[in-house]
Image (cartoon, rainbow, N blue to C red; front, side, top):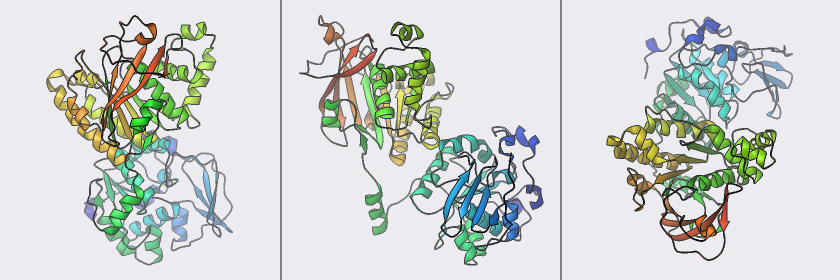
Length: 511
């Protein structure tokens, strides 16, 4: 913990009464502070009225006016959230979901510590209690809602990262726990949690006259860690009630669902794919199905293709015809505008239902883990696809490839379990079915799927059929044949093939 003499940069509180200094944008990794300077703010009627223990001067500090039964909270870009005091209902005018309340009052590097609450009233309460008797800057901001959007984290990450320490003064409930998990993944070394004890939130401390207790809890905030013990009846009952072990989403392959249920969360699914089994088509089918048919936010690391290939593949499954290149689209009578509209459908209303990400080739293993955390925390991804593990090994250098993938497998497993997401990894194998470098990830997997295809068959349908087999199934125990997929050359899509299953055979090439 920082001592009182280390808390701020020696700046007087009065220095925070104006908007951001626009010369502060030279801080490395911090977004342009001008984005958070209030713009086009209309003068709300009302006056600065103290209430719920908050003084009128604090209301003025945060520009919160009261007009009869209405209280107006002005956000950095000028949007206003209005709270109706008698009913506790809210309305909004030009309110954005990507800003923190109070953010415009505190420049980057205003202090070493920033405090985050879950509401505007708690922000003002916390600031008032922390600033009382202090000559240092005490940045306090609040989330716009209990379930912040991905855009908020994306936009505010640089500002938050300019502080050395982030103290969470949030409710001890499911929403508060999710905020803590998200912040931990974004800022793993900086997040501290306050223990509110018998008080619900910061304003509860203030109204009870427990300002000293709040300061004590603030100074005593402990570094957040997702690891911990489950002990006592209440904790175990909470786990039983709140956790959904091996939650799954059905796939479009009925034969697979009969023994595998679907794509499982809370662990890694490894798909072993020899060359020529159509694994890319299989992944695209699953990703499109999850995003569009199941409305699940899906993220993908597709290391063997550029973004337009991935996007056009999603459009192909949306349109039901091959548009993987402009020439293919033109040949099939599909305009580029139709391709773009199809991609928009896949992306959904938020534009973020399907996201793709890259990694830093200089540090592939650690960056893969970091990007997976961002996909979960910023975009709320429920499923992440990684294609393919051997490419990570090659980028890591073959000498240390096995050790690097072993470490990645363990960390991805813990991430999937802690955040209850499904991570699907493709692992290439040799013609003898052995995996290069990634056998440890197979051991970490809760589900193992093996793909096969006979490209040399005299039967054209057989040449274009991929067989799936579940050889490991920790959640549901059943193993065995898990369906067949038929590739259509004209549409560049795979669909489930019904009928009797032919014997599994070895294969060597791509579609």
